Length: 185
Figure 1 (cartoon, rainbow, N blue to C red):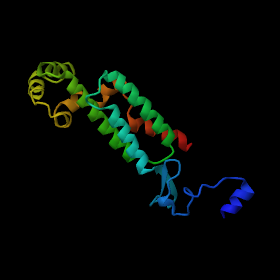
Figure 2 (figure 1 turned 30 degrees about the vertical axis):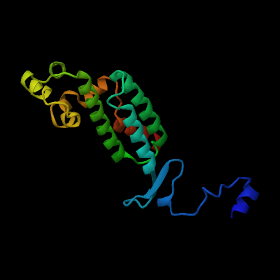
Figure 3 (figure 1 turned 180 degrees about the horizontal axis):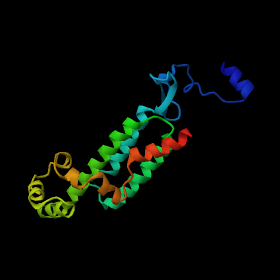
Figure 4 (figure 1 turned 90 degrees about the horizontal axis):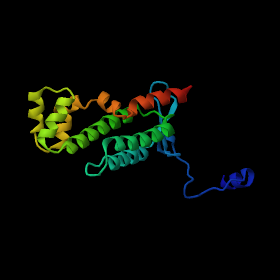
């Protein structure tokens, strides 16, 4: 078979990469394949390693101790997520984008909470975002349990998806839905 491909088509076959396998086990240009249970058609989605690599990259960009402004980090995050979604927009990845989107917003809330540093500044920030004085004071003195504060307190309501969108953050899920619809046409 490889002789025919090399002789007839004039293509060079890389024997370390070339193999015969089922589509489910195939990785091609970062895509994996699966059979849709409803329509019985083969579809593509980003391979698990590709999704893990994106998550690792986003984690690097949202490292808590990394210096810089929130708007600068958001600009870099938008650049990475838009590029990744534009490449993989043909594939089905709504669940992955939902998870990544929620996790990214949580990490940004943690960064903002950490930048406020002292309880007085935290209370001021929460009040500025519309939380009443008593609840803001109670939350401001919770301590430095960053993930817990960002997910289980009023910080998630104060620094909502809309607030982050006003700061410039592009929602991964919304952007994916928009690009996916264009690729299917």
